Length: 242
Image 1 (spheres, one colour):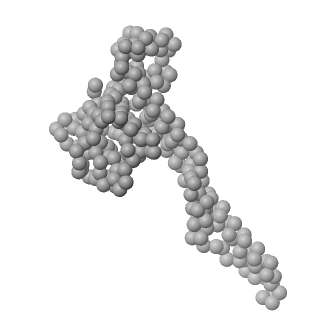
Image 2 (cartoon, one colour):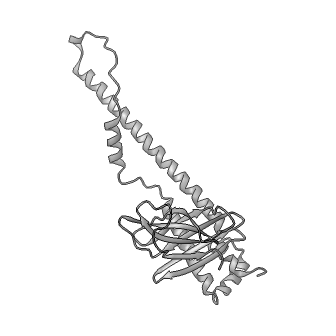
Image 3 (tube, one colour):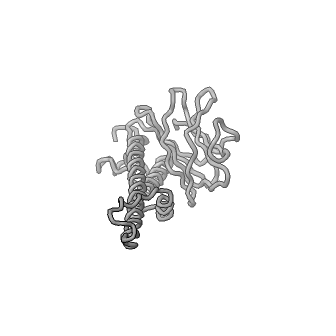
């Protein structure tokens, strides 16, 4: 292994190392707890990305379609060609049925297009996260700031991005966990609120540091929807570099 083995954990987790390098890195893992933690964090991130890309229709699809039908203006029947006295009730009913069917088709089309857009966005986000994890200069930092809570930060200066993931956070009611990027002068700026599932996994967050003064991340508990500036002490504070 001709380079520092610690920078190869991302490539190893993605299966991107040649067979010989992979074997040598596994020998290194036997004596390096830090790399073992990083690999565990990458595996959790990969599992989250896999679940995020699922295309199962949402459980409320039927309700959304029916609601769209109720809102959609139905087409008026075609102009009458026969005298009103001879107009068939069957013909009039058929026009209403066709109009309702058209409304359903339009509503379904809106829902399907929305689902396709979401899947494309998730796949693009997955691609960008993988690019950071496998970057040659990626710096991986894993920490356990609170008992039962593990976090992983992967930062690539060349890509100008970082990936944050965590495990073990409890779900909140009426509040959100908010991710902040921290500068060396003590100032912070928001990188958004974190999505935590029932098992405590945090969906990986892809963030773009604004400047070279940005040196780490922090997590606070904020009112639902997040805050412009932190209103509580950080639960997590991790620098980019280990």
